[in-house]
Amino acid sequence: MRKIYVCIIFMLIIGTRGLAASDDGIRNWKYIHARVTSILSDTVDEENYMRYQKVMVELTEPQMSGELEVENTINIATIYKIIVKPGDDVIIVVNEVNNKLENGRIYSYGRDKYLLYLLLLFMGVLILIGGKNGFYSIISLTISVCLILFVFFPLILKSINPIVVVSIISVVATLVTLTFIGGYNKKTLAAIIGTIGGVVTAGILTFWFGALTHIQGIGDDNVELLSYFPKGCKLNFRDLLYAAIIIGALGAIMDVSMSIASSMDEIQRNYPRITKKQLLRSGMHIGKDIMGTMSNTLILAYAGNSISMILVFFLYDRSFVQFINSDHVAGEILRALCGSIGLVLSIPLTSIAFISLCKKETNFNRRRMNGRLL
Image: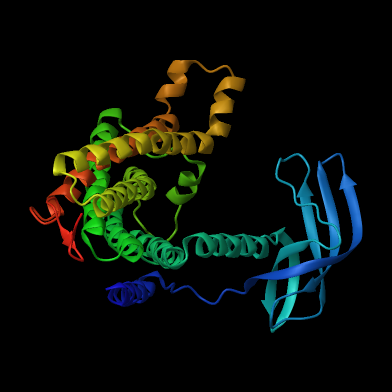
């Protein structure tokens, strides 16, 4: 079953890659890894609040070698500054003309190498603690990320409704992730039912209260850049917000559903004479304990993502009415509360689904194993 899922997802991703193919002309600008070897000059224009560095860098791309002189122009009046020193890993942007690199400048620090180290550490911890399940978690996570990067975004750039796309991706990601982790059994099926039920609930509430509050999905600064998208792509920012809410809620709801189904399955295995009523009560009790922490996780995660915006309201002494009714704040509250409600409702859905999937008699009556009564 796992191999079948992998093959289907691989074919789906390959098929949608063609949709994302750009028909632009050849781009001469290249982004190249390099390391700063020396600072040739470093001057400050205090009158115009500018700083100019001439930097010698060593190219560190696999197919490139040698040194190149590049410029680093810094606006010292802004918050974001890239002031380099020898030994720094950087990304330079250069123009390639007749196989010659020209007009090089510093684009950013080279961060990808260290992020890769962190990713490898994350994967190592998963495998070390989780063993085989940790390995399956890595595969399912990779598939989920690929679905978002290579299916979701290419399709919405083709003006396909984000809600339709995210609904399909949510179902596929749920099936793949939970089957990889839990195997093909009633525990996994109950978790799938609970997850899909919780996500559907979160989605319905998002549409309903999004319409009531007239959320436009334009609170993010990046939305303004998308509004000038030059390729004729029609983006519905409200639908994009709704899709983001569903994706954000999916992981937490999936986590809760699998935790409850797995716990109920373990209880039943160790106490085969437990009644359905007792098992259902146990599942609900486990869910109540998980509910408080996971709801906090969702809400605090969204609050943490909005710290800068909240500080602006405090520092500029904005009123509570201004704060609560701004599009961005209302959107974040909608995101947190709808996701949390879907998470809470996934608890009874998963518990009831697990009970319904259990055999009527054999799993709840006395059993004989090796001639002894359990």
